[in-house]
Image (cartoon, rainbow, N blue to C red):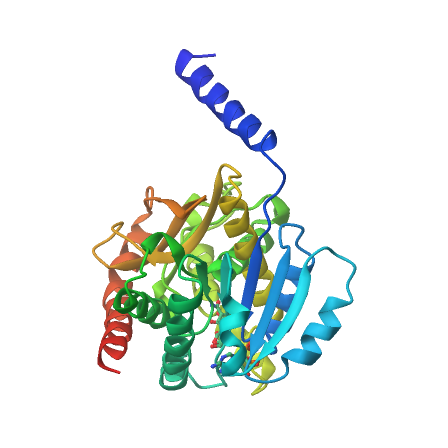
Amino acid sequence: MRPSLLRTASQHLRRRRDYSSSAAQPERKVAILGAAGGIGQPLALLMKLNPLVSSLSLYDIAGTPGVAADVSHINTPALVKGFMGDDQLAEALQGADVVIIPAGVPRKPGMTRDDLFKINAGIVKGLCTAIAKHCPNALVNMISNPVNSTVPIAAEVFKKAGTFDEKKLFGVTTLDVVRAKTFYAGKANVPVTGVNVPVVGGHAGITILPLFSQATPASNALSHEDLKALTKRTQDGGTEVVEAKAGKGSATLSMAYAGAVFGDACLKGLNGVPDIVECSFVQSTVTDLPFFASKVRLGRNGVEEVMGLGELSAFEKEGLESLKSELMSSIVKGVMFARES
Ligand code: NAD
Ligand code: LMR
C-alpha cells in the first residue's frame, strides 16, 4: 500500500475507534413540528423506531394528543410527548437537538410548490421565531415547501434573532436522492440498495439536478436519452405523486422515509459518527447562489463541510446554468418576505 493510502486508512480506523470507544450514547431530543400531518405521523413512527432518539416531541396545531398516545405505545426507548397549540410550543422545543418541520399545506394537482408560499411562509416564520427563542442550538431540518424559499426565510428569522448558525440549517432534499436512486436502479437494472446518486441545486422542478454521471455503481447501459428521461422523472417526482393522489395531497410516506433518513444522519453526525454524508440545501459557496443543495458532511456541530459538485457532464453543466435564475428568485423571495413581514 502507498504510504499516503496507509496514512488515510489508519486515520480512518483511528476515527472509527475513537467513536466506538467513546462514552455511552448521548440523550437526544427530536421535535417534529406538524406531527399530526400526512408526513408528520409516519415520520413520528419512524423516529420512534430510531434507537438514537431518547425523547420525541410531537407538536401540531391540532391532533397531536392522539398521535402521541398511539406512537408512545411502541416498545422502543424514545419517550414520546404530544404538544398542541401555541401555548405548548415552547415546551415542545425546549432542549431539542434536532427539529424537523413538515408543517404547512401540501400541493394539489396543477399547483407549483411556489403556490404554497403564501400560507407556508408565515407558518415557517412563526415556528422559526419560536426555535430561535427556545432551542437556538438545534439542527433544523426544513421539509415545508417551497424549500427553496422556506430555508432562506428560516435563515433570516434566525439572523434577526441573533441565533443564525449556517451549520445548523438544512433544507431536506433527501426525497430527491431517494427517487433518483430508485429510478436509476430500475433503469440500469442494478440492485437498488447499493446505489448512490447525488442530487444538487434546489427542491422544485428544474432546480432539482440529479448527477447521474456520478451515480454508483456506474452503468454504461444507459443512453443519453435514458439519462435525460431519468433526470426529468426525478425533477417531476413530486408532481407524479401529487397527480396520482388526485387532490389528496403530496408525497407523505416516501417523504417520511426520506425525513427519517436525514434526521438519522443529523443525529449520527451530532454523536460523532464519522463519514456521514447526505445531500442538503444549505448556505453555500459552491456556486454563486447563497443557498444550494450539494453533498454535505455532517458532524458534531451540524455541517462540517459543504462538498463541491465534482465533475459534471455537459448535460448537467447545462442543467446547472439553467436552474440558477429560478433558484435565485425563490431565495430572494424568501429573504424579502422575512425582512418585510
Ligand atoms: P398535511 O396537511 O398532511 O400536514 C401538515 C400539518 O402541518 C398538519 O397536521 C397541520 O395541522 C400542521 N400545521 C399547520 N400549521 C402549523 C403550525 N403553525 N404549526 C405546527 N403545525 C402546523 O401536509 P403534508 O403532506 O404533511 O406536507 C407538509 C409539507 O411538507 C407541505 O408543505 C409539503 O409541500 C411539504 N413536503 C416537502 C417535501 C420535501 O421533499 N421537502 C416532500 C413532501 C412534502
Ligand atoms: C415532493 O417532492 O414530493 C414534495 O416537494 C411535495 C410536492 O409538492 O411535490
